[in-house]
Each structure stands twice: as C-alpha cells, then as structure tokens.
Amino acid sequence: KNVELKDKQSLMEVLKENFEVDETNGFINGVGELRANSDEKQYIAIKVNGELAAVGANDLIIEDGDVVSLSLEVWE
Image (cartoon, rainbow, N blue to C red; front, side, top):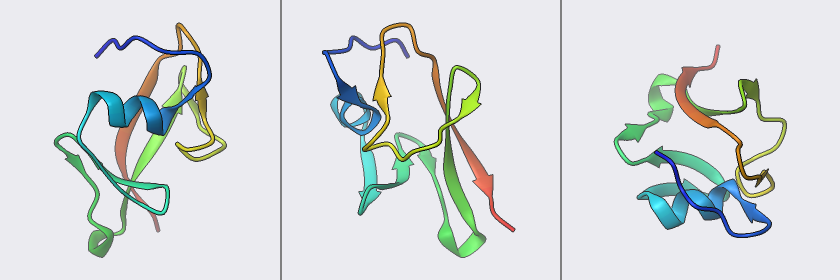
C-alpha cells in the first residue's frame, strides 16, 4: 500500500496511521491480517528497501520513496 508521509515520521507512526497495529512495548505483534504467534516463535521482520532494519519501528524514520516490507519469520 502506498501511503503519504509527513516529515520525520517513524515506521510505527506511519503504520498506526494507516493500519490496525497490535504492539507491545514497541514490538509489533500484528499489522492488519499479519499476526505473529510467540508460542510458535514467530515475529514480524521489517525490511526497508530490501535490507533488514537495524532498529525497531519506533526508531526507524521513513523517508519518501522508501519501500517497507513486513514478513512473518520464525526464530530458532
């Protein structure tokens, strides 16, 4: 989904303005239909322009033209 950005917005702010977000202490548990199940060791991974994000959604500042993808992953 393409969204309009305001200056200096974090990914969490953008997500909350455009989707239903389930989060706990800054950790994303779900966005829209995408839901992580911690009992199954699932988490939501964030990629920006094809690269895994080095910071969490609250600290990740999105810029115009960035392509963000969220995917369900399993930790070992």
